View (tube, one colour):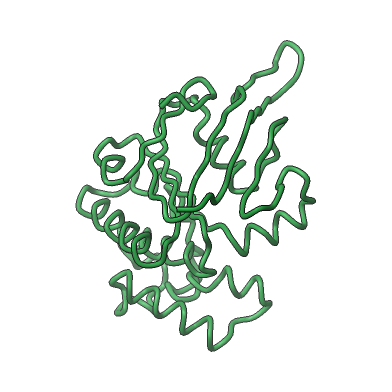
Length: 225
């Protein structure tokens, strides 16, 4: 397993003066290729802030952040946007599907944005991913007509559309019943094994965390375990 990303002495502060709040306090973390890791910690521990920075959606106040050999703390916003689109996928607790789009249109959206249009190749890739998610019969369904578990599987497929090296998942099973949650995690595990995609999954669910090969505990803005 080779190193995928590393953050060192990561600090994130919000506000200033009397209202200053330091959420990350010099956090260190390394993730390797092909990892399946759970991110654990109480509310307010800094998990969401860390995920946002790792996803290049927020700049740290100080510290280093490298991924695939790129120093992301020195990158411009345009460079971060391009890097994110090429190398990072996201799955959220609320699936954030576009309600006027079909399942397939939602999945291929990241590639359509990057390339400026839908292509036959992107549609074929989207159909393949939905088939792997067990949704071959839901390809052309409008997003609102899908069940909660189906919507989240579409969201996982969308995150994988551009074949990212890293997928960040923030409570991806938080709104699902147990059976749907297990199904989503089984699919994530399958993708991790077969494609080598690294997943970092923030969760409060110890059963979900136990399905991951590594558990990373954050407390008071630091990795504590």
